[in-house]
Length: 302
Image (tube, rainbow, N blue to C red; front, side, top):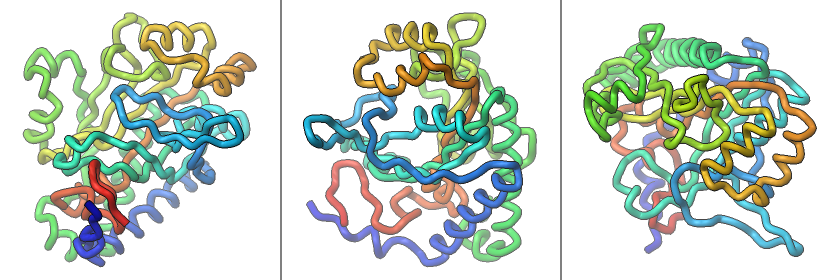
């Protein structure tokens, strides 16, 4: 099936809002002392993720490049050059077709990835809250009338965002707690302290040995997950221990582990999906309406 209909579903107002949003977030981060790096599209290392996707790799002169699922490892290594970095990073994740109907998944999407040397989780929470408020204020000033015609609930969020502990929410609402809480919420909120079993090896383990010093940002009104991030493991022995726990292949991340042996700095950071953010701001039914040439799971598109 060849699907080119996505091009016609995107409103020009959405593209204008998206362009201004990206510009606004970049300018905010520059004012906060960040520099922008170029993205990495193919690499010998990439995010193992905590859920399965179809392999996306390219054989090249006897070796293999993977299409970048996220720049998590590149961000950590880049801090040896500059302490505060961000990238508008294309991500390729060949999700299963069952995710096509969620309204939240594309197989090609863009993340605003950022990482800060010597930062704690609280530093990133505060930074993201400030960035969202700043960006939403700029959008309100330039597109307020248009935005409210598309989204009657558009508003500049109140800070600080509420913090919700994963296990508390799970005990109260069961396994679908994040969707339930998202539908009940009228403001963005943070989901924190996610169990070790639920996330990748690179988020830092807390002192209790059961939960991570990490977070997800959740949009209200049922729009769901916006962002993932946290403090990072940076000590070689702890990284190896976590990889064994998650049954990750050490050989597939040899380039990264060789650099970790030399020493990488402690850090914290996150990645926020641009298309999901546009979907939330503009009250769109699907992320496929948030960009031109969208590629939904299980379809072939231009």
